[in-house]
Image (cartoon, rainbow, N blue to C red; front, side, top):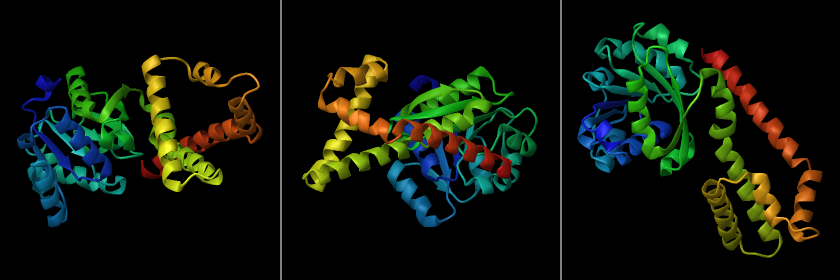
Length: 275
């Protein structure tokens, strides 16, 4: 994978939270800092990125895009159209345009770029910042297999990648994109419960965080269904089964289902507003 991206010229046009996570992941995957240029509107932000990662920075998006094999669009969704219009003349025919902007369909990019320009839509989630994320990869109709594989290699340092179709992107966002917030919500609730039982806040938080971290690792490494692992913890007539009964009585499972549906529906609404 390192060999695949060695010598690849990559431009990051805008360096918001997700774009910076992709940048860090690409460097972690073996991309050389000398092959990266990032743009920032504020000089101090550019200087910060240059010092932190050893990359080149500029305020000129078209200059950054010139000669790049991959161009990552990392500005806010409302600014993407103007960004594309300003750099389209600098793109090579085989330059792969990678979107990390939420809510913008491939058809949006097709309206601003040449018909044959390869485009790959992606959606990382926030654990990508620490190399433990999962990123949806949606190839555009003109993206060749080599283009998509190159994007996946750049994203490898952010965690897992998963190719999906565009019609699945709202469901992905509702589950994996918003999912970290659900986990943080649960961890916060568990920690508060620990405080209620007399633990200090620091101890309660550490216990909740490590429990979720360890449980996720157990799921990933054993490959067992979560229901099976849950049953192994829930002895008949024991403490855990009583706690789970209270969660069921409180409608927690149903609340998760409706919450994820609500996130999916809102994603569709936002896409309609932007696209």
